[in-house]
Image (cartoon, rainbow, N blue to C red; front, side):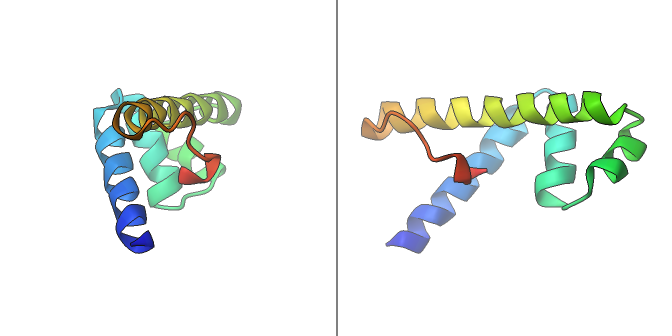
Length: 85
């Protein structure tokens, strides 16, 4: 049962990522899915590293907020553990 739940959460996170604006979607994929370092992403996106950190933080917050909204609506759970992403 636990692996099914984890699999669904992962799929839903990918669905949320697909809906993000491109700048957030690109950096979150490069960091969390492709596993690139901040320096590699900054070079690839031609962003200042501090700007990149802010962009990643905002992307993670958008994902958490959307996931929390889904959890609340579906199961009445108020907050999702920060470990989801």
